[in-house]
Amino acid sequence: MTLVFADPGPGTLGRVDYAHQLITLHPDLLQTERRSTLTHELIHLERGPAAPGCEAREELCVDREAALRLVELADLVTAAQWTDDVHELAFELWVDPDTVRVRLRHLTGREHAVLARVRASRDGESSDDGGDAVEVETWA
Image (cartoon, rainbow, N blue to C red):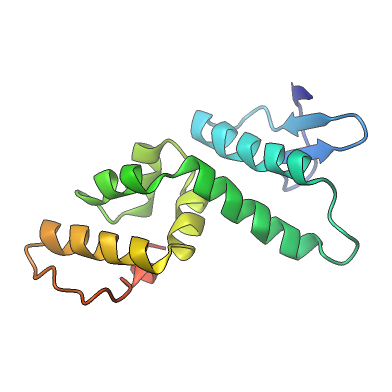
């Protein structure tokens, strides 16, 4: 696989050329954006091209996998002990805000419960959440 820094095209941060095993990243990306985008494009390479008509679904799957790989629950819990702000979480987790949003949208029930307890404890509230999911939309 070869990585180059060049313009991948209008409105695009990264692109994969499957035939040449080439990833192109926009040269102006910040470090967190490079990390997030490179992981995303590497997953595309692992999975191969999407079937015709399935490109949008493939993007969602790749976004989710990248967020899972880049944001471990333990790190998210540590950051959530002091902030709910997506930009602060992204800074702390060394990813871009979109990656944090995707990770939060795809929490398991157990992960929701863990974060609900952390947030309640941080905010001085009761941590008896009954295992219900925390409303992460407030973080998006």
